[in-house]
Length: 299
Image (cartoon, rainbow, N blue to C red; front, side, top):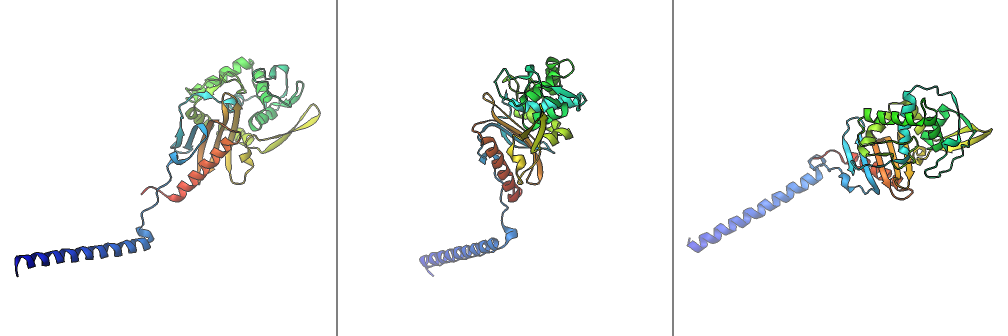
């Protein structure tokens, strides 16, 4: 065999071996595609794939504290009526008589934003009813009267709010009134997650903040109220605690303790633009968590 013949024979062997390898690879590939156990598991969605209109967002696993979504969580912003969760905790911590009747006063008027209220001066409700209206429907005069009738008055009440915040490690937070109407009531998402966790320990706050509706008697006539968070009326949501908030400086705000994708999570949304954007963000978060859970763990 000549040198050229030997080279040609060697080249033919290489080509044949390459073809055999290609056939084997293709065969193995088909076998893996047909075998579910051999497929690589899907990775869950990344939280940066969740489009949120809220300027600030934080979603944490309530049990472990694991952060699932974080967007500007350290930013310190006005929190509007999210404030009323702190108001409720201070009232309940004081162990005041919830059946004591309290009269709405001219002092309870909103002189900051000029918001309206159906609780007119002279209307008398129990402290329990005022707490319910403050948490469920974000009634500003109800919250103001709770602070005004606290032992020592509103100034002492606000001091107790700030002391409670410090005790909870809410170092980014400051309160100046019990309603949240002042833009000087500020906090961060990470602080509010702490506040939600603390508030969730109070059965009455859980109950009242998620009540769908209620009717109270004021000045001889019934006044019907609804929860400011429409999600509590949805069969698709399991909400254990809720509070909304809005003033122009704060935008639309929402905090919740909610069960999603078979686990308890804390949701904080601040400075959301558009009347329905905070609800839209909450739904997007829910969809992401459910999709992520269905996708399974990382490979």
